[in-house]
Image 1: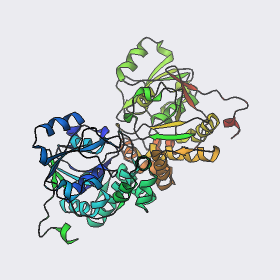
Image 2 (image 1 turned 90 degrees about the horizontal axis):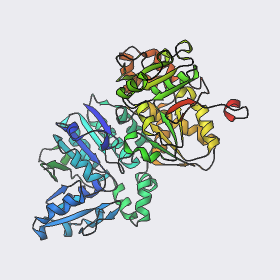
Image 3 (image 1 turned 45 degrees about the vertical axis):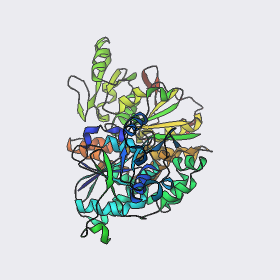
Image 4 (image 1 turned 180 degrees about the vertical axis):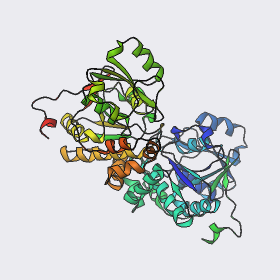
Length: 250
Length: 250
């Protein structure tokens, strides 16, 4: 099993992902928020790459069962029902609903990787469940750090490093590329206190300035759920957890 | 002074560099090779972004005084006089000559950053001289890791981290972005033996397979010269070293 990390989705094109097993990470906040939408009972999440497309596809859907969510540069998009805070997506708000979701980095990274054979969404909240699933699949892995405006993000890299460390415990014969080795080292250097690392990151500081400190705390929590969003067609759904599946038992 | 690192030149456009002080790093091998061309008496180096443009501009130049150099994916470009090995560019070969230089990553990164107010080329061979010059200038710095085919390169990141560590000793009040903090951590994790890190990197392995192990050794050597290539117009020249300049005395 070979593990590679893309420190930004920009360096490859859509076809790069054909047939690949891909994990998308955008800790602050899209991947954390998507995990929690589905965990709280949303029927499905439709990630989109532009605000215009979000508005277009939601227009044809039955109003009460569809919600438009997301942000552009930290702030809720005008006219959207919800922003990009995982705390907004409570069971009361999302249960049974379809969420059309746009964010500056995370949802666009998912759309870019849509040709993947398997695509999972990972955050600190569900990291061990994702690691177990990947070890079970035993296929080459591409981890996309959604990053910030096509550039490096410390928090996504550290989360990727932690995910790799967990996979290394569960699987054998793993080959790591340079970027995979690098994020592992970054997790060792900065990942001891996830909350501190998130708070002091550039993106964390920006979120704090905009009043989202509670989100940072929420995004820092390890393994609060075993929910794994996976892409089927153009839609993210909760990965069914079989009776005999490792991720239940872990 | 703020220090930022671009882990690939892809995340920004050419105008991003307007008015900036920029350092381009491509340890294996373009930045090492450029440093050594000028150190060995080349009159100037013209970095170009395409093979076609290299051929075009060299065509109008006086044959004996102009050399075409460079590589595409490790191998010398067909029809070029020289490849991308620093060992080829001896004083006998380059003294007094203009080198038109194309490489897959390094020369293209320099061309992309051509609107910089100051642009320097850094390798392990001249790293302390570059650090001294940057500390003396005391301006915000953008360090470009040329990377490999628009993706992450461990060796360029570690070299950027070492450069930052040296600047931190020489200057005060330095603010590091997330990527600058990250490469510093990578230098601590992987930079203890530069030769070992280079040899075991993806690019190092590829060079070794292609018979360039001596180049890796050469590229790993610290501070063998105080030569600093800087961009003036579209041409790289050796930064004049003044009598009273710090980089002489260090």
